[in-house]
Length: 452
Ligand SMILES: Nc1ncnc2c1ncn2[C@@H]1O[C@H](COP(=O)(O)OP(=O)(O)OP(=O)(O)O)[C@@H](O)[C@H]1O
Image 1: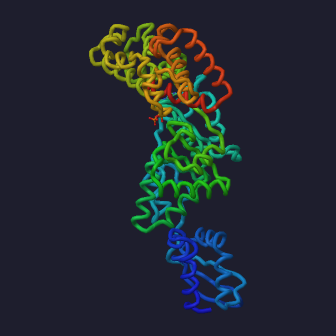
Image 2 (image 1 turned 180 degrees about the vertical axis):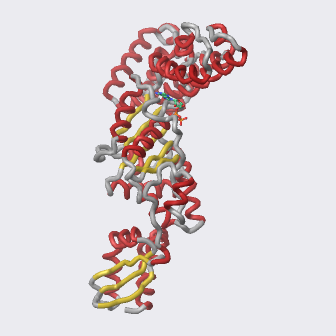
Image 3 (image 1 turned 30 degrees about the horizontal axis):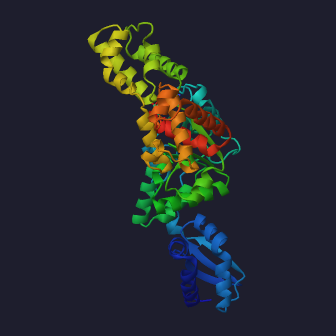
């Protein structure tokens, strides 16, 4: 066998495997010798050799035989100069690790926030399932659900849980190669690798991890080539039984412009929802934070009822709640005053006002019409076809749940309908919600976006 034969087989492969496969896998192969029916190729990495052998081996052998060479086996030898060592422990990529462990390849992980641990995560009803699933994954035992998909609204603790998993694994299972990064960083790495023609390094790095954690995956929606690469990385890791943990601001099925095959892959494991906080959880979080602040601002007095007041009034998200408490302590320490209800009302007036925002029936009608793609006028009009009537009932249901309006008042706002019609609509949605997942998801999504 000669270089020439390989050249013609390569041309044939270029026509059959597609441009991206050819550039990534075939082009870097170098024919280096042929003996006793074994064709030897030199490859930059062993990962690449295995991949080519698994995915294109038979095809290459077949084409070589067709070209008149009696090839029984292909062998892929790693070219010494191009060897890359994947980092053994790339978690959170500190500069020290980068220097000592992977001189040529920059580690892909993002830094972890040391405050985001399981100890500092307050568990309540809205997040207990997500917490339990995260704990299980953090034990680093055999992979039982893959991926773990955590989703929930802004500031409800997704990133906190992801970091907690990563840090627990880091201390309990230092042998594992854990990589945490945001979907945005994944895309950035991918684009950079493309630009610098280092796709092989990129692929090798991401396929060499034991636990891959990607935060805010909704970010890659609509970004076609990043999605494609993410999909391949995802599949390669699942095939090797490596754990994947993903977070997003909504359920996989709700992420628009995400390819269906990715959606269905993401739904394969365990999908858990972080629900909006309830009063008890908010109070628990505040109490935990106060313990920390007491050390930082020793001597500050906190009057009874202040935390309860904040937990009651600030229900948007935990980030806002934490911000309010931080501001309150900083302010009280500056002016040297006791933290009383009055001080809180004064110092947090803007946050309290924003949290006070009332949801109106008009807003609900508008959001629901947009969601179901019907006209606002149809929402209050007379049409009774299912495609209009069902969204109308959803809007009635949400109006009952999220506003303090009475049934007759809601009826009036829906084109002067009777209160019994509203009652019927609300009941119907309640029934559907119990066994129709689509309706349940629609309601959750709408409620979130209205409360945001
Ligand atoms: N249950 C909890 N216990 C303690 N702190 C919490 C809890 N939930 C959220 N937090 C805190 O709230 C803040 C926001 O949480 P985090 O960044 O994890 O939210 P997120 O869900 O990732 O939000 P985003 O969608 O904006 O990325 C963090 O400081 C986090 O520590």
